[in-house]
Image 1 (cartoon, helix red, strand yellow):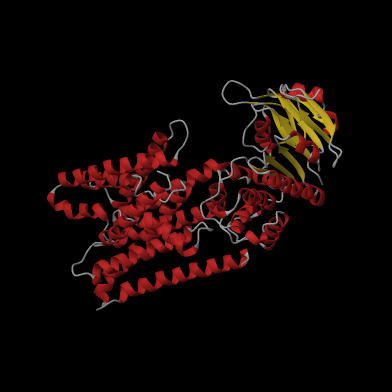
Image 2 (cartoon, each protein chain N blue to C red):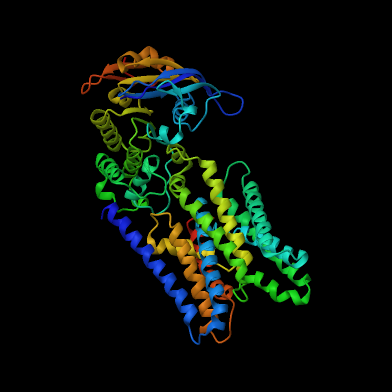
Length: 314
Length: 265
């Protein structure tokens, strides 16, 4: 099979994933009883699921690709929980508005990413060390988030619970246009850097030989991913496992040959939409989306830890 | 048009000590040049400096008499290619896909691969005889196949000048000859200027048109194999006694190192 043909098949697969996303949007909007009032709740909910799914999926894939390790997703290595902790603090103790919270969460995420990178860069950069340091940070920030929620005033707890595992209940429409704009800008930037990133993934030397501005490309990609994570988290909370699962699933579906940035975003949207749909209608009690996706992520994490350990990678 | 690449009095080093001291080289155009020298003589450092992986502390590298610093990096990438020593690739990537990434400097912003890109990718794979491997995953290839895939990656970049850092290391003699023959063919058909670091003196004189001999960060000798590969020079470069004979197949100089255990006088 020649390379041109394979590229055509790849485009076809992307189109199919896209069609699935559209189909799921319609399903979540039109399931069961519908009327104008219900639609007023459902449209922002579905839009938020779509945007957050794309954001988590793409950001996770960029991290995993740049660090060349499926464990290096921002929700495993503490970047997401770092920005979540900052957001929880701003909401519970400072009563800031959502957009400001997103910006502070982004800055915190970038700071945490830089800190984890710095600590794992003792003499020479090692992505394994980065992952271990990151898992430590992840545990620390989860504890910190729990502690802040326990300290919070009782009437704040329902809002705060969103930050435990992600929830699409009570999405406010006015937070969405800003999230949409941010996702769009980051999407365009990441796609624009995609060719350079493909050279970078072969190796830093190859990228320099190809004329890629290595430091600029890497820094911009990380910043865009952290922005995506932080802004999406500020809207939906940290929906478990989406960033972690989307890239590998997209890789399995579309092959490892392409960047899979677009397909990861689409898979992320599919996971959030279908997870929320399952949590809402298919189980006996209504569960938040993060609980459903978390159940998917846990066995995969265990599988990865065991298989990477066997390969001697960890 | 051939491109003239020169190093002008370059000194290169990490930290305080310089690995290269005041080296000036003019790469012979459309020829195969080989850089020889003992371990730590600065061969790889020289190659890396030409390829922008290291920046000289003093002196400049010029392409057609313009300093590399003043040329757009994508434009340089269309002229200078490299096969690095440590080859890495993303796990599970297919051969054709890896080779296609060599097109980066030629691709326009956001656009898919063009007809020219596909042509260059196919030509590179044909030249390295890996067309049948196109759909194989890089992880399942043998050492020699892998090396050819990475050379094809460098060829897809369609540069006039190609540097190779020890392209035959870790390969058995059959693969070494195969790779060097393919490079010679490339040099003859496409007039590509080839510069490589080799450890094997005899293969260097068999395939090289021109030899640069390095020692302790200096350029010690340069010239055709007949001028450079003499037993006096070998003693100076490597510090060993040797006898130089003529390779009966190519006529190039062939060295036989002397050992303290040699019994025939």
